Amino acid sequence: MLAADLTIVLIVFVISIVLLISNRVRYDIIGIGSVFVLMVFGITKFSTVTAEIGSLPVLLLGIVMIVSKTVSDSGIIDKFAEVISKKIKNEYVLLFALFLMVGIFSGFLSDVALTLMMVPLSYYISDKLKKSPSKYLMPFAYMAVLGGRYTVASTSSNVVLYDLWYSKTGHFLNFFQFADPGIYIVLAAIPAAIFISFILPNRTKKITSVDEFKTGEYLTEVQVQKDSEVIGKSINDFEKDYGIRVVAIYPGRISWRQRTIFGGDILLVRLKPESLTTLSGIKGLKMTIPNAASENLSIREVFVMPESRLVGQQLSQIREAAGYNISVVGISAYGKKIFGRFRTISIEGGDVLMLSGSDEDIAAFITDNSLGPLSEREMRVFNPTKGIISIVSLGFAVILASFGVNLIIAFGAALLIMMITRALNFKSMYKSVQWPILVFVGTYLILGAAIISTGLSGYIAGIILGSPLILFVVTAILANTIGNVGSAVIMGPVAMGFPDPLKAIVVVAMAASCTFITPFGNQSNLVVQAAGSYTAKDYALFGSIIMVVAMVMTLIYAYL
Image (cartoon, rainbow, N blue to C red; front, side, top):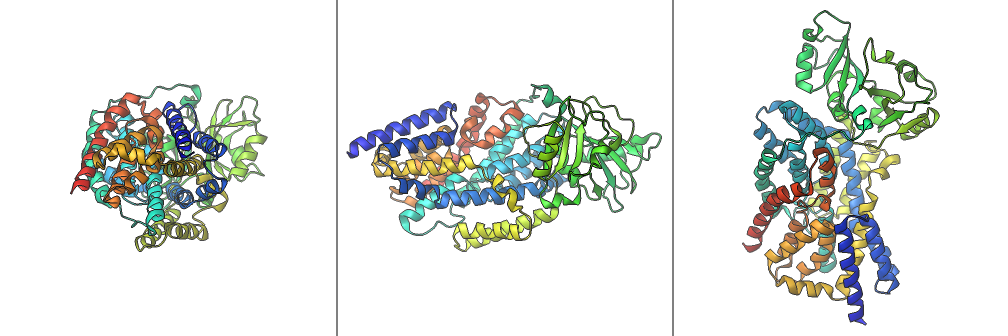
């Protein structure tokens, strides 16, 4: 009977790998299907399914996702990176500083969230250096993944190994258990990432649709307050410092391009959505976004249908409309001729509006005015209070975890602090969770348990032959085909059979995070693929460079 169960598990395992590699079926659906088959054949019990779905790795990942998203939404890391970019003029020194920053932060934040934060910065740097964003997007994504390996809570595969170690030994791994060799890998990979940015092709992303072109830039208006940091700058200096174009200034002057900015001035600016964090972070500029932005309001883009009753109205009529607690942050700049203030711009069919408000109010506004919601993309308004609270809360969680407190309790405490201080809006909290990933983690934990119970992991261990090199290579191959969670679930138990299981677990952790050589190996790769016009060949070539660096540093650790 055991042999039959092993055969069934092997078949399920192989089919799931083939489906994951093909990328034709979503990974969480593959996980659910695999578990269903195991239950049908009686290999996995229902009690096991419920236990794994609600297990420590799944719950902890959900909490970490919420904490990471709160830090991300505050815009504080974007602002910090922007300040660094302004202070450092040399491209390679700047990249070294930014890659180091990303590597450090990714030990505590989701690599996907951190990659999304770096996308606007890539555009900022590319504009500043007159190069394509494709030179920087991939290296930033690689560094976000690389750094997420030296703490036990930084990536889902590490969390899986953390739970596995506890189940086998009865005690938890140290929070910084993977720091050696994780930190050395990050430091060694920075020069490699800089080299990759140097040799990456300078590609320009082609526009594939009219909507994409029309939402490329927005017009918005800001008022200069008495304490603003831009007072005394010329218009040319403002544009050079912040990468945001000024379309008009009120009150106007002759030769206004050289005009000095004063308190009380009104600036009509043209910016990319990615620059919204930069604009909102400039001290003393009052935007059309109300102070309620600190109350976790959303920023959404909506398409004005030809039949919408807003067509022909001026923006002032919308901003003053009763019944909707929303604000028009911007309007698509494409084809607009400016003859006055922002509020005098008339809406036309086909325009795209950038709205600020609660999800409920924006939804009602969309329904009542024949508007079409566009797919969401990351747009953040800099909120220093929220940023400071979220960073302090995260630091508190790290301190607790460093002293041996259970990760659920440590990060749960951070979550509670964010909720009490209103840095986190509990109503939208569940939107921060990437549910497909949690489902995949839970289902693959179930498949991993079946692999162990049927003895399949023993056969895999026979292939490894106790070699850290083979252990790393096999884990890395699995990570780039079925994902880091799947590789950790399968190879973790194999590592536990090594003479030095702790060192072997660290090798698996390092290899499982080497998801660089396929676009679908890691979500961070997918985030930048379209924006950078990267091909599968690009990931195979440039990702191999980073993986070799990680492998060499890991093997030095393993054999010393």
